[in-house]
Image (tube, helix red, strand yellow):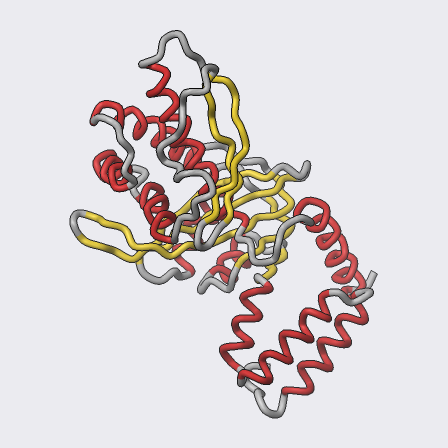
Length: 309
């Protein structure tokens, strides 16, 4: 089999599995960050229920019910813990049908950033306005620390189909200073189609190859040896780190990132037409047609935008 035929078959196989397991996702969704935020909120709510039941000895936990939470950037699908008597309501959640803004998400991300600092973690929980005593907040903090530490230590499968890496920029208070940080979440899909957060990593300042080598080495040390495809934005230094530590892995860049680059590098009318044609190429009947259309599109703008093309 020649290399071009092999690459085409590999692309078709990857696309088929992605459609099977992620076919319901909207293209703008950041699935890795989504799942981290959902698990973080669910961890806090479980801690709240534990505190509530300690003061209600004749009551017990009684499973979960679904609820969606809309924010400025995300729509989260949550499993909300409930009690047998129907009296418990998590204070971390806003009133039903109420949207929250990105500040709410920034507060949640500060909990992730401060995962190893008990005092800072407690401070972040207080900023969320939870109406508990210092002792009760301490119990919620301890439950959350255990959950966050699980992300850092758990053993990973040896072979996975895909890794999705998302980044969320936020500002966090650190010893009375406000620092800019970016939290990167790694979500894996194994060979059985199960999705799980494999880890999160906080960078202060710009990311680089050395940081990404630490991230990928952490995944390797926890057992992850082979990855078919890694999907991410064009984070500086990540492609080089993937080539160094996972040389057989296909690194697929985010489609929305490509569209943003088009708008940044081309004039507004041309960028609009270029992105419209890209959408059409994505729905091509087969690989050969899509590739031919893409080459014609690039050739059309090569003279005016030679560097970008």
